[in-house]
Amino acid sequence: MHPDEPEPPSHGSLQSLDLYRLAKTLIPGGTQLLSKRPEMFAPEQWPGYYREARGCEIVDLDGRRWIDMSIMGVGACLLGYADEDVTAAVIRRIEAGSMSTLNNPEEVELAQLLVKLHPWAEQVRYARTGGEAMAVAVRIARARTRRECVAFCGYHGWHDWYLAANRAPEGEADRLKDHLLPGLDPGGVPSKLAGTALPFAYNDLDRLAAVVGERGDELAAVVMEPTRRVDPKPGFLEGVRELCDRAGAVLVFDEITSGWRLALGGAHLRYGVAPDVAVFAKAIGNGHPMAAVIGRADVMQAAQESFISSTYWTEGVGPAAALATIRKMQRVDVPGHVASMGNRFRDGLGEIARRHGVAVRFAGHPAITTFAFDHPDPLALGTLLTVRMLDRSILSGSGFYATLAHGEKHVDGYLGAADAIFPELAEAVRQGDVSARIGGPVRHSGFQRLA
Ligand SMILES: Cc1ncc(COP(=O)(O)O)c(C=O)c1O
Image 1 (spheres, rainbow, N blue to C red):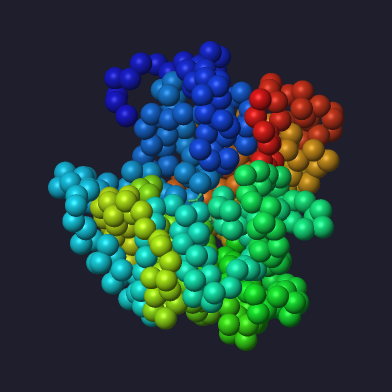
Image 2 (cartoon, rainbow, N blue to C red):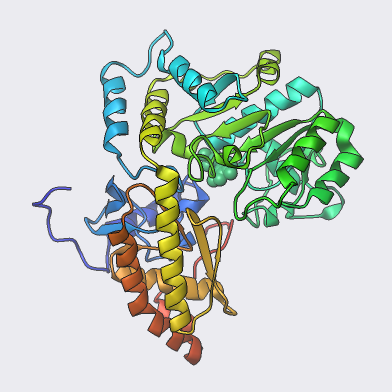
């Protein structure tokens, strides 16, 4: 961010919007991640591309500065963008060579640190992204048990084992719609995988017990986040543990989003239930690709009964970033800070919404807050809020992922803006002209094909 940067352009013809239009002709779907599509925020208005990102501040391609009060790199940067300790460790590794014929020693040091933080775990494998790490975990579970079915709840990535759920038998389409993302099309996933991915709802132990009752002897794994939107009901995680033990299935906790936000080392440590395998990605590298699959040695050893191997899983930046990230999280109380910022955001926005008579519903843990309007067209009202926040140089969507880089001034800045915007939202609801005020299309709620 240079002090002598030219004056940023106002809304209008923007490189960022032009580039996204071009991208959609060159890149099917426009971006590599659904959640980064501008259509998920405010189509034709959301700045699609950035030039620099530091702390919780972003400079977009047109030189405009934004405070990010949205999803912060989709949860990848829990310490904030370009954290200086992580950046320094990464630069050291890059300058010393991030790839060679030999292996990087950081991956062993990181394995030692991970098993120290997770006394139930003894061994570690690595990948670089969440979805592939989940695919590794499922492969290990299948190799270990010599079984094929996976019971799951929640979202776990794009791989065949998971999307197979939408290759449902007996015409039950979109079984994934209650698992974070509606409308996921399983095109390209072999129909022969139908019936191998069996969904159950979080906190519904009876449903999982029924799945185990029906398919227990085919069950390789139970795959779930230890928490996402709510805490487990008393006895739920313990009950899942017991069902896995009874069925001989591997219990896999996906800590890709929950991990490190709610407790150092992952949410399962807070709840005191040990899985057989846990998977970390996103925040573990604070913006640098890194993922870890950790587990009990007798389960992890099944990795040797399959072929699980990839060139770039051996590069050195990911482990260097993860070591620096975790060490910083050992020094600083990140879960305490993000809970406090999340609560401040939620309490403040809830109070503003009540005062202006616009009903807002919150969900998720304070550190990963999502919200929606209680209105016949919640997406339109949400888009209007996003657009008005853009007028105030704030990136705001339908959720706030608090990070170490967010301070009270950022949250209070957002709340001040909300206080100025909500009278118009209330007025728009009264007049019934929410969509007309947006100045562009309403945002999407899930997976849609882009024109
Ligand atoms: C719980 C969970 N599992 C898996 C994934 C997939 O991770 P990635 O996008 O890195 O492939 C995500 C991403 O949002 C996630 O939240």
